[in-house]
Length: 516
Image 1 (cartoon, helix red, strand yellow):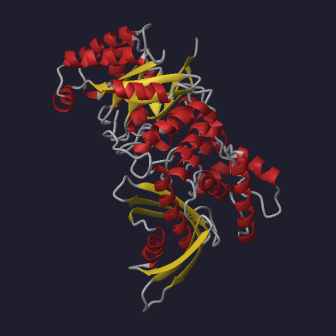
Image 2 (tube, rainbow, N blue to C red):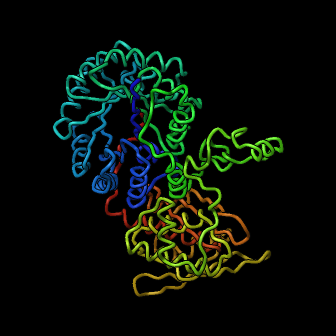
């Protein structure tokens, strides 16, 4: 029997970025897109071009970088959105516009305030206009999970006639159970057979995103929309790694289905995105969690030592996790070895960025006895995602005692000038950030602060992620990495300020968030 290739539509850069705290800058998005291409993703939804000049710029740069995956931009069923999407992906080798409108009675009545016939007309017009830019147009029935099946058939007829080749049926609020999704997909798949393919986009509000996606595949869906690590609005989306590995491990059930995914790139992709967003998968997360291949029970350990398949249904190497190669490099390692290690970890750096990363690695190697893969990932990610360095931390001195007032003195470089100032605060971190505010002239509001140990040991690197709002503009994210947590915190805060300054000329009001 002929194998059906399931298209993997990754929306980490669009829906995944809508996870609270997961915003990414342009350079970070480019690195993620390059890794998604290496992973073998069929379609990369690179963003929502009409949302802001920053989103448009990121999609445009990704379109120029990616050649083996289709680059897609989301667009509401509005001409200005579609035009922005078409222009943003214009330089891509393979292009797709993904347009949508709500089709459930509750959305049409209360959100759109449109009659069903008006919705059909708007949808068909949007697809026809999108076809003037690209040949590959996807149409989504937003809130399909709560839409009338008869109405979805009507709108499918109209948009297919207008040129849509993919019909997406999102369970926007994560409400449906697997058998319900299966019934809907089966009926719609049979209805559009030979005219378009059916796609699904399942949210995880009830923890059923992956189960619903797998059932949809069994019932006729030939594209699944998903994200790395299950990122996304609210409880997230169906996780790419879980869908792909379920198809692979349970090939006895899914024997007629396959994907183009290179599963050995799953773990490197997961780690890259966790490092960039600062959002770690839960330790017991399927496939990519810290404990996914850990065995603590004595009975389990005994079984695994005798024969791994007693308790392991897949090998760590299947997803690119080499547990025997976690200790890496040292202060005597050369640039060639460092570059080779980066390639194994999934990084592709330009020459200047590679040189800067290698210099930082050598400094770290002089101070840290053992360097792990995660140290390298954090170091390189921190380097490659830096915004233009308007301000740079030179030194930091803390003055604190149990009976005294927390205070900090900071030296910051701007251009050729070095400026020193000090401040007191309600705590040490507060004092550090206030001193930075005094020197730079910008006052930030700290919305979120996270610190984690990158690897293990007393000399582990501290990786600090902050979310800061300047001048009541949308919050930006900053990352800081150092053996000293306070210095890492200062670097993260300065990183957020530099990101804000690099974006300041591009900021404008965004449309409301889009949830499919």
